[in-house]
Amino acid sequence: MLITKERRPAIRTLRGWAIDVLQEAGAIHECQEHGWAKDRTDPHARVRAFEIARRDPPAGISSECAIAELRDMLDSIGDTCPECSAEQ
Image (cartoon, rainbow, N blue to C red; front, side, top):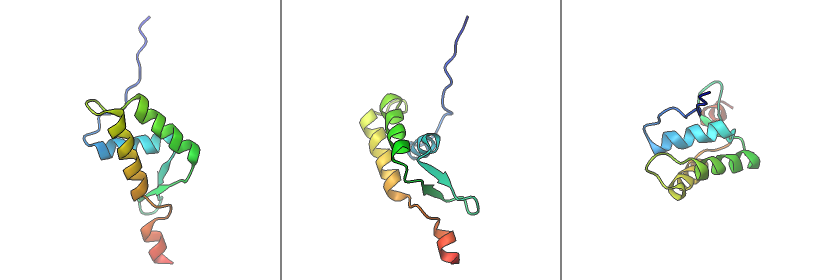
């Protein structure tokens, strides 16, 4: 019996990969109205994202670089949508 491992879709940039991993782990989500990424501030989801980066970095990228990219992405994403905040 042949067993296949589900692979992540091909991502063209390291930034795109980081966003995909953070969404998969539940560390970020989209504003339903405007589409901006928002940090869920869930420490367990962050741990899951870093475990994914450590275990399965993109091809040709070291796990250290993958983890650094996740940190950069998390540092650049707030927990509120800029457009929702402006509407208030």
